[in-house]
Image (cartoon, rainbow, N blue to C red):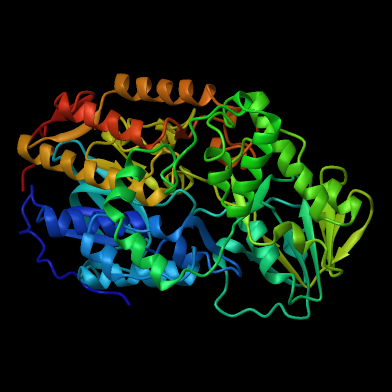
Length: 550
């Protein structure tokens, strides 16, 4: 549903704006930002989204098996205690449809739909140095002005399409998991899946039982643990609701904010027998982040501890996957240092007679033909449907695709030519009054708690800018210092030692660089508090330079 503005635009004078703020995106971040700015700060706000409904990531990612791998009791907003008490869930993890329904409920509950314009992508946003205002142009050609622009574009929203020779010649259907069609029948078809990250593992596990044959094309095998999904009883939900105050206090003061107590025990400080017991216990509970951060405190930092965890997962693959060749292809040999994964019955799926594995590390894809995928061993894998679980141009992809211009007409592509940077993951030098939710070098955590943290802090910064009657942007020095901080922390871990999307390594030609603050949510919140307590140190507040004649 596309709605029309309900807030009367300001009078048509040289210094007026149509809205105080424009929010780009209507997922977790955009929804809360609209509520915060409009309902709490009393600003006139318009939110835009190119989708036909709200939900962001959870609107688009409708592929079979799609679910969050964060436990449902912390994959939600915490800002409203009544909302926490009123809304129920029935499974440990929330499926895509559950999350979408929840976000639609939040929009209705806080009467936000009237100020969300759907089916409307943003083509350009340009800052005027003289008036300190933004002019935003939609893909339909509508132009509106605002004092503030908040980008809630999503970390994982610009799909990454692989450049494979002959892909345009395929006679069957090609589907990217990030743009799944409303209606598609896979039953009885020969299906190929390229990609075995979180999405790939979910879709492989979900569609294997219904297709005639499934071929998983695996280039880089991943470490994965069981998700441990299961029904939640009414008593369990009631108990959690009764403990939400302490639960959210723990989340906000944790590292990854996934709702479990993170370990403080080094892996090598206990016996081999105890390590195996702890690994097995967490394998049985399930959860990727729990396995990496809830078992021992140094899996992500100490090579010996990392190898202990990796070795345990490898042994499980060998134990579960009965075909030795399939097991070999699926077994990682590198560090356990990508985004921690979990899936329901992923390795067990490869015991099915109708599931095969193509080893792209040994025999890469040569071309796609009308009939299927040809690999370097000369084999043609005949397919009716090719599913691309090839992920996203993460973090900065949607920024670079937009005509986004700051002071002096400088584009974001020019500003980020070497690498995407920010101050605090929220602002970037040269783009005044523009605030990013989950911008580059924001926290690497369960996302809703980080989104809430950033939205609430952006609101404080907006209020400060209004009080000072000035545009606000970070200094170049503050941004550089933050980038160095993020790089220093990343270098203290094992994550940069492998190629993964969290460093931009999944997109050919993209610079491999630090993309996240890996210091944890508690430390991130402390950094924000320190900047605020010092009078928003690191920011410049600049009045409009001149009055523009009418």
